[in-house]
Image (cartoon, rainbow, N blue to C red; front, side, top):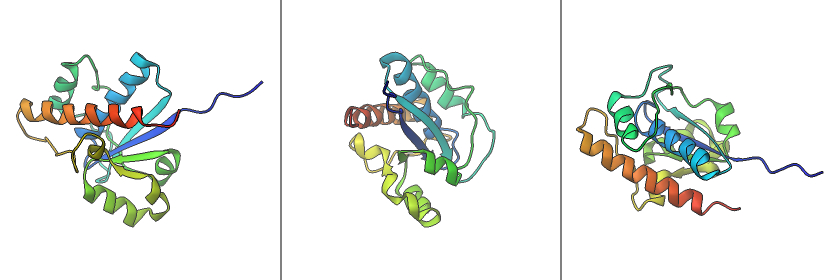
Length: 153
């Protein structure tokens, strides 16, 4: 009897883990449920803010496409979570630089998420109007779709 390969593990990282990375985590979880993708997902923020709910506008923007992220809570980026992840998908180049600085051993896992959707970075929508959150949501979903489509089977 052979064991099934374990799911691919994705870690999404932004600044505070209250807008972009929870939106990405929620969308990736949705793909697991709706498409049966073999993924495990987590998110965190380089600021290390703990146990805060996602921004209300992020929750509403994801709810527009049928994804509930209201139960997610912010967290940091501890070394054990970085070790757990196969890929660490960051929203900004400064997140990538900071993680490389603090955790050089995971350098090869870190990639900018937006690069899979045609952008160098995923801009922070905090405090912005809903249209900006929608634009960011579009970039996140497009980037994740492209990323998972190119994962080895």
